[in-house]
Image 1 (cartoon, rainbow, N blue to C red):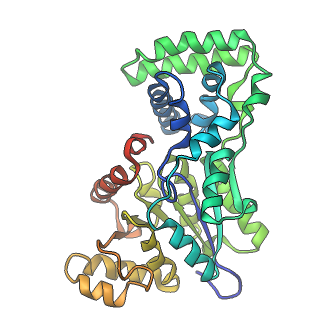
Image 2: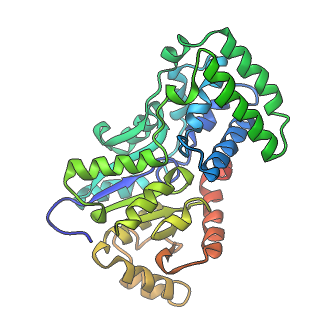
Length: 343
Protein backbone atom coordinates (compact mmCIF):
# COMPACT_ATOMS: atom_id res chain seq x y z
CA UNK A 1 0.00 0.00 0.00
CA UNK A 2 1.00 3.65 -0.36
CA UNK A 3 4.44 4.70 0.94
CA UNK A 4 6.12 8.04 1.54
CA UNK A 5 9.05 7.30 -0.78
CA UNK A 6 7.52 9.05 -3.81
CA UNK A 7 4.61 11.23 -4.86
CA UNK A 8 1.30 9.36 -4.77
CA UNK A 9 -0.32 8.85 -8.18
CA UNK A 10 -3.99 9.14 -9.12
CA UNK A 11 -5.37 8.39 -12.61
CA UNK A 12 -8.80 9.68 -13.62
CA UNK A 13 -11.12 8.76 -16.41
CA UNK A 14 -12.34 12.08 -17.82
CA UNK A 15 -15.97 11.74 -18.91
CA UNK A 16 -18.03 11.05 -15.81
CA UNK A 17 -15.59 11.65 -12.96
CA UNK A 18 -14.45 15.11 -14.12
CA UNK A 19 -16.83 16.29 -16.88
CA UNK A 20 -20.44 15.22 -17.49
CA UNK A 21 -20.30 15.61 -21.27
CA UNK A 22 -19.98 12.56 -23.48
CA UNK A 23 -18.15 14.52 -26.15
CA UNK A 24 -18.48 11.98 -28.98
CA UNK A 25 -22.23 11.73 -28.30
CA UNK A 26 -22.54 15.51 -28.55
CA UNK A 27 -20.37 15.68 -31.69
CA UNK A 28 -22.65 13.11 -33.35
CA UNK A 29 -25.59 15.38 -32.49
CA UNK A 30 -24.15 17.90 -34.96
CA UNK A 31 -25.88 16.04 -37.79
CA UNK A 32 -29.50 14.76 -38.12
CA UNK A 33 -30.37 11.79 -35.88
CA UNK A 34 -26.73 11.56 -34.85
CA UNK A 35 -27.60 10.87 -31.22
CA UNK A 36 -29.71 7.87 -32.22
CA UNK A 37 -26.91 6.51 -34.37
CA UNK A 38 -24.42 6.93 -31.54
CA UNK A 39 -26.74 5.14 -29.08
CA UNK A 40 -27.05 2.21 -31.49
CA UNK A 41 -23.27 1.99 -31.99
CA UNK A 42 -22.69 2.38 -28.25
CA UNK A 43 -25.01 -0.57 -27.61
CA UNK A 44 -23.12 -2.53 -30.27
CA UNK A 45 -19.89 -1.69 -28.43
CA UNK A 46 -21.38 -3.18 -25.24
CA UNK A 47 -22.42 -6.34 -27.11
CA UNK A 48 -18.96 -6.86 -28.62
CA UNK A 49 -17.31 -6.32 -25.24
CA UNK A 50 -19.67 -8.72 -23.45
CA UNK A 51 -19.07 -11.30 -26.20
CA UNK A 52 -15.31 -10.90 -25.72
CA UNK A 53 -14.64 -10.28 -29.41
CA UNK A 54 -10.92 -10.77 -30.10
CA UNK A 55 -9.11 -7.54 -30.95
CA UNK A 56 -11.99 -5.34 -29.81
CA UNK A 57 -11.76 -3.09 -26.76
CA UNK A 58 -14.60 -1.35 -24.89
CA UNK A 59 -14.69 2.25 -26.05
CA UNK A 60 -13.81 1.41 -29.65
CA UNK A 61 -17.14 3.14 -30.35
CA UNK A 62 -14.95 6.20 -30.96
CA UNK A 63 -13.33 4.34 -33.83
CA UNK A 64 -16.62 2.99 -35.18
CA UNK A 65 -18.30 6.40 -35.42
CA UNK A 66 -15.50 7.97 -37.48
CA UNK A 67 -16.92 6.88 -40.88
CA UNK A 68 -20.20 8.58 -39.92
CA UNK A 69 -18.37 11.77 -38.90
CA UNK A 70 -16.56 11.73 -42.24
CA UNK A 71 -19.76 11.08 -44.22
CA UNK A 72 -21.28 14.21 -42.66
CA UNK A 73 -18.13 16.33 -43.10
CA UNK A 74 -17.52 16.84 -39.38
CA UNK A 75 -14.14 18.52 -38.83
CA UNK A 76 -11.54 18.08 -36.10
CA UNK A 77 -12.25 21.65 -35.00
CA UNK A 78 -15.91 20.70 -34.42
CA UNK A 79 -14.80 18.33 -31.64
CA UNK A 80 -13.13 21.23 -29.83
CA UNK A 81 -16.10 23.55 -30.44
CA UNK A 82 -18.51 21.04 -28.92
CA UNK A 83 -16.09 20.54 -26.03
CA UNK A 84 -16.23 24.25 -25.20
CA UNK A 85 -19.81 23.63 -24.04
CA UNK A 86 -18.67 20.94 -21.60
CA UNK A 87 -19.14 21.58 -17.93
CA UNK A 88 -16.99 20.39 -15.06
CA UNK A 89 -18.36 17.99 -12.44
CA UNK A 90 -19.25 19.86 -9.25
CA UNK A 91 -16.26 19.97 -6.91
CA UNK A 92 -13.81 18.54 -9.47
CA UNK A 93 -11.77 21.72 -9.91
CA UNK A 94 -11.44 22.21 -6.15
CA UNK A 95 -10.48 18.55 -5.73
CA UNK A 96 -7.81 18.66 -8.44
CA UNK A 97 -6.32 21.85 -6.97
CA UNK A 98 -6.25 20.29 -3.50
CA UNK A 99 -4.73 17.01 -4.69
CA UNK A 100 -1.95 19.04 -6.30
CA UNK A 101 -1.30 20.84 -3.01
CA UNK A 102 -1.38 17.52 -1.16
CA UNK A 103 1.43 16.27 -3.42
CA UNK A 104 -0.47 13.93 -5.75
CA UNK A 105 0.71 13.37 -9.32
CA UNK A 106 -2.47 13.57 -11.43
CA UNK A 107 -3.01 11.76 -14.74
CA UNK A 108 -5.94 11.51 -17.13
CA UNK A 109 -6.63 8.26 -19.01
CA UNK A 110 -9.57 8.85 -21.33
CA UNK A 111 -11.23 7.40 -24.41
CA UNK A 112 -12.10 11.02 -25.33
CA UNK A 113 -10.76 12.58 -28.50
CA UNK A 114 -7.80 14.88 -27.91
CA UNK A 115 -9.77 18.02 -28.75
CA UNK A 116 -12.02 17.36 -25.78
CA UNK A 117 -9.52 15.89 -23.32
CA UNK A 118 -7.02 18.74 -23.71
CA UNK A 119 -9.76 21.35 -23.40
CA UNK A 120 -11.23 19.98 -20.15
CA UNK A 121 -7.80 19.37 -18.65
CA UNK A 122 -6.76 22.94 -19.45
CA UNK A 123 -9.75 24.14 -17.40
CA UNK A 124 -8.67 21.85 -14.56
CA UNK A 125 -4.99 22.77 -14.70
CA UNK A 126 -3.75 19.29 -15.64
CA UNK A 127 -0.62 19.38 -17.85
CA UNK A 128 -0.86 18.00 -21.39
CA UNK A 129 2.00 15.57 -20.81
CA UNK A 130 -0.10 13.82 -18.13
CA UNK A 131 -2.97 13.07 -20.53
CA UNK A 132 -3.58 9.76 -22.32
CA UNK A 133 -6.41 10.10 -24.86
CA UNK A 134 -7.58 9.19 -28.37
CA UNK A 135 -5.82 11.20 -31.07
CA UNK A 136 -7.93 11.91 -34.15
CA UNK A 137 -7.38 14.09 -37.21
CA UNK A 138 -10.54 13.94 -39.31
CA UNK A 139 -8.98 15.85 -42.21
CA UNK A 140 -6.27 13.19 -42.54
CA UNK A 141 -8.88 10.41 -42.39
CA UNK A 142 -11.02 12.17 -45.01
CA UNK A 143 -8.17 11.87 -47.52
CA UNK A 144 -8.26 8.08 -47.15
CA UNK A 145 -11.91 7.45 -47.92
CA UNK A 146 -13.62 7.26 -51.27
CA UNK A 147 -17.23 7.66 -52.29
CA UNK A 148 -17.67 3.92 -51.71
CA UNK A 149 -17.26 4.44 -47.95
CA UNK A 150 -19.65 7.39 -47.79
CA UNK A 151 -22.32 5.51 -49.75
CA UNK A 152 -21.86 2.39 -47.62
CA UNK A 153 -22.20 4.35 -44.38
CA UNK A 154 -25.26 6.33 -45.45
CA UNK A 155 -27.00 3.23 -46.81
CA UNK A 156 -26.31 1.35 -43.55
CA UNK A 157 -27.53 4.31 -41.50
CA UNK A 158 -31.06 4.01 -42.94
CA UNK A 159 -31.25 0.36 -41.90
CA UNK A 160 -29.54 1.01 -38.56
CA UNK A 161 -32.17 3.50 -37.43
CA UNK A 162 -34.88 0.90 -38.01
CA UNK A 163 -33.25 -1.85 -35.90
CA UNK A 164 -35.11 -2.85 -32.74
CA UNK A 165 -33.42 -5.98 -31.36
CA UNK A 166 -29.80 -6.60 -30.34
CA UNK A 167 -29.48 -9.54 -32.75
CA UNK A 168 -30.57 -7.44 -35.71
CA UNK A 169 -28.31 -4.56 -34.64
CA UNK A 170 -25.29 -6.82 -34.24
CA UNK A 171 -25.74 -8.57 -37.58
CA UNK A 172 -26.04 -5.27 -39.44
CA UNK A 173 -23.02 -3.63 -37.82
CA UNK A 174 -20.90 -6.79 -37.99
CA UNK A 175 -21.48 -6.68 -41.73
CA UNK A 176 -20.53 -2.99 -41.97
CA UNK A 177 -17.50 -2.90 -39.70
CA UNK A 178 -16.00 -6.37 -40.13
CA UNK A 179 -16.92 -7.26 -43.72
CA UNK A 180 -17.79 -4.30 -45.95
CA UNK A 181 -15.54 -1.52 -44.64
CA UNK A 182 -12.36 -3.67 -44.47
CA UNK A 183 -12.90 -4.44 -48.19
CA UNK A 184 -13.26 -0.73 -48.98
CA UNK A 185 -10.77 2.12 -48.71
CA UNK A 186 -11.25 2.42 -44.92
CA UNK A 187 -10.55 -0.31 -42.33
CA UNK A 188 -12.27 1.19 -39.31
CA UNK A 189 -10.53 -0.44 -36.33
CA UNK A 190 -6.99 -0.08 -37.67
CA UNK A 191 -7.40 3.65 -38.37
CA UNK A 192 -7.96 5.01 -34.83
CA UNK A 193 -6.33 3.78 -31.63
CA UNK A 194 -8.91 4.41 -28.92
CA UNK A 195 -7.66 4.59 -25.33
CA UNK A 196 -10.21 2.23 -23.80
CA UNK A 197 -10.35 -1.20 -22.18
CA UNK A 198 -6.95 -2.92 -22.10
CA UNK A 199 -5.29 0.24 -23.44
CA UNK A 200 -6.35 2.12 -20.30
CA UNK A 201 -4.63 -0.50 -18.17
CA UNK A 202 -1.61 -0.26 -20.50
CA UNK A 203 -1.52 3.49 -19.78
CA UNK A 204 -1.51 2.82 -16.01
CA UNK A 205 1.34 0.34 -16.50
CA UNK A 206 3.26 2.93 -18.53
CA UNK A 207 2.75 5.52 -15.77
CA UNK A 208 3.86 2.96 -13.18
CA UNK A 209 6.99 2.10 -15.17
CA UNK A 210 7.81 5.73 -15.96
CA UNK A 211 7.37 6.84 -12.34
CA UNK A 212 8.87 3.71 -10.75
CA UNK A 213 5.71 3.43 -8.64
CA UNK A 214 4.15 -0.07 -8.31
CA UNK A 215 0.47 -0.64 -9.14
CA UNK A 216 -0.38 -1.26 -5.49
CA UNK A 217 0.52 2.38 -4.84
CA UNK A 218 -1.63 3.84 -7.62
CA UNK A 219 -5.24 5.00 -7.30
CA UNK A 220 -7.54 4.91 -10.35
CA UNK A 221 -11.02 6.40 -10.84
CA UNK A 222 -13.49 5.28 -13.53
CA UNK A 223 -17.21 4.86 -14.15
CA UNK A 224 -18.06 2.74 -17.19
CA UNK A 225 -17.37 -0.27 -19.39
CA UNK A 226 -14.29 1.40 -20.91
CA UNK A 227 -12.74 1.50 -17.42
CA UNK A 228 -13.41 -1.99 -16.13
CA UNK A 229 -10.06 -3.51 -17.17
CA UNK A 230 -8.18 -0.61 -15.58
CA UNK A 231 -10.24 -0.88 -12.37
CA UNK A 232 -9.83 -4.65 -12.25
CA UNK A 233 -6.12 -4.61 -13.08
CA UNK A 234 -5.24 -2.17 -10.30
CA UNK A 235 -7.56 -3.95 -7.84
CA UNK A 236 -5.86 -7.31 -8.54
CA UNK A 237 -2.49 -5.75 -7.69
CA UNK A 238 -3.94 -4.38 -4.42
CA UNK A 239 -3.99 -0.78 -5.56
CA UNK A 240 -7.13 1.29 -4.98
CA UNK A 241 -9.69 1.37 -7.79
CA UNK A 242 -12.68 3.67 -7.31
CA UNK A 243 -15.88 3.60 -9.31
CA UNK A 244 -17.55 7.03 -9.33
CA UNK A 245 -21.29 7.13 -10.10
CA UNK A 246 -20.65 4.00 -12.10
CA UNK A 247 -22.78 1.55 -14.04
CA UNK A 248 -23.24 -2.21 -13.85
CA UNK A 249 -20.31 -2.76 -16.23
CA UNK A 250 -17.79 -1.05 -13.93
CA UNK A 251 -18.97 -1.45 -10.32
CA UNK A 252 -18.10 -5.17 -9.84
CA UNK A 253 -14.48 -4.52 -10.89
CA UNK A 254 -13.65 -1.72 -8.44
CA UNK A 255 -12.52 -1.94 -4.83
CA UNK A 256 -14.43 1.15 -3.59
CA UNK A 257 -17.65 2.78 -4.77
CA UNK A 258 -18.28 6.53 -4.47
CA UNK A 259 -21.74 7.89 -5.35
CA UNK A 260 -22.18 11.65 -4.95
CA UNK A 261 -23.07 14.92 -6.65
CA UNK A 262 -19.82 16.55 -5.48
CA UNK A 263 -16.38 15.25 -6.46
CA UNK A 264 -14.75 16.90 -3.43
CA UNK A 265 -15.83 13.85 -1.44
CA UNK A 266 -13.04 11.86 -3.09
CA UNK A 267 -10.74 13.81 -0.78
CA UNK A 268 -11.87 11.75 2.23
CA UNK A 269 -10.45 8.71 0.42
CA UNK A 270 -7.17 10.28 -0.71
CA UNK A 271 -6.67 11.74 2.79
CA UNK A 272 -7.06 8.33 4.46
CA UNK A 273 -5.18 6.30 1.89
CA UNK A 274 -2.99 4.42 4.40
CA UNK A 275 -5.99 2.88 6.19
CA UNK A 276 -8.57 3.37 3.48
CA UNK A 277 -10.68 0.23 3.90
CA UNK A 278 -11.03 0.73 7.65
CA UNK A 279 -12.31 4.24 6.95
CA UNK A 280 -14.72 3.03 4.26
CA UNK A 281 -16.11 0.29 6.53
CA UNK A 282 -16.68 2.86 9.28
CA UNK A 283 -18.34 5.20 6.76
CA UNK A 284 -20.74 2.47 5.64
CA UNK A 285 -21.58 1.64 9.26
CA UNK A 286 -22.21 5.24 10.36
CA UNK A 287 -23.61 6.98 7.25
CA UNK A 288 -27.31 6.47 7.95
CA UNK A 289 -27.00 6.28 11.74
CA UNK A 290 -24.65 9.05 12.83
CA UNK A 291 -23.96 11.75 10.24
CA UNK A 292 -22.49 13.99 12.96
CA UNK A 293 -19.82 11.37 13.68
CA UNK A 294 -18.90 11.31 9.98
CA UNK A 295 -18.78 15.10 9.71
CA UNK A 296 -16.67 15.39 12.87
CA UNK A 297 -14.33 12.45 12.37
CA UNK A 298 -14.17 11.33 8.74
CA UNK A 299 -14.71 14.51 6.73
CA UNK A 300 -11.85 16.79 5.72
CA UNK A 301 -11.67 20.57 5.63
CA UNK A 302 -12.50 20.35 1.90
CA UNK A 303 -15.73 18.41 2.50
CA UNK A 304 -16.98 19.50 5.92
CA UNK A 305 -19.35 22.17 4.60
CA UNK A 306 -20.94 20.03 1.86
CA UNK A 307 -24.54 19.22 2.73
CA UNK A 308 -25.41 15.71 1.53
CA UNK A 309 -23.16 12.83 2.52
CA UNK A 310 -22.03 10.55 -0.31
CA UNK A 311 -22.35 6.79 -0.41
CA UNK A 312 -18.97 5.11 -0.02
CA UNK A 313 -18.95 1.31 -0.27
CA UNK A 314 -16.28 -1.30 0.31
CA UNK A 315 -16.82 -3.43 -2.80
CA UNK A 316 -14.17 -5.95 -1.75
CA UNK A 317 -16.59 -7.39 0.81
CA UNK A 318 -19.55 -7.79 -1.56
CA UNK A 319 -20.69 -10.63 -3.77
CA UNK A 320 -23.96 -8.94 -4.75
CA UNK A 321 -23.79 -5.44 -6.22
CA UNK A 322 -27.49 -4.81 -6.92
CA UNK A 323 -27.98 -2.26 -4.13
CA UNK A 324 -24.80 -0.36 -5.04
CA UNK A 325 -25.74 -0.35 -8.74
CA UNK A 326 -29.15 1.17 -7.95
CA UNK A 327 -27.60 3.90 -5.80
CA UNK A 328 -24.99 4.75 -8.43
CA UNK A 329 -27.64 4.74 -11.16
CA UNK A 330 -29.57 7.52 -9.36
CA UNK A 331 -26.49 9.70 -9.02
CA UNK A 332 -25.30 8.92 -12.54
CA UNK A 333 -28.61 10.10 -13.99
CA UNK A 334 -28.52 13.28 -11.89
CA UNK A 335 -24.98 14.14 -12.94
CA UNK A 336 -24.78 13.01 -16.57
CA UNK A 337 -28.27 13.46 -18.03
CA UNK A 338 -28.71 11.81 -21.44
CA UNK A 339 -25.16 10.39 -21.34
CA UNK A 340 -26.05 8.28 -18.28
CA UNK A 341 -27.76 5.64 -20.41
CA UNK A 342 -24.64 4.94 -22.47
CA UNK A 343 -22.44 1.97 -21.49
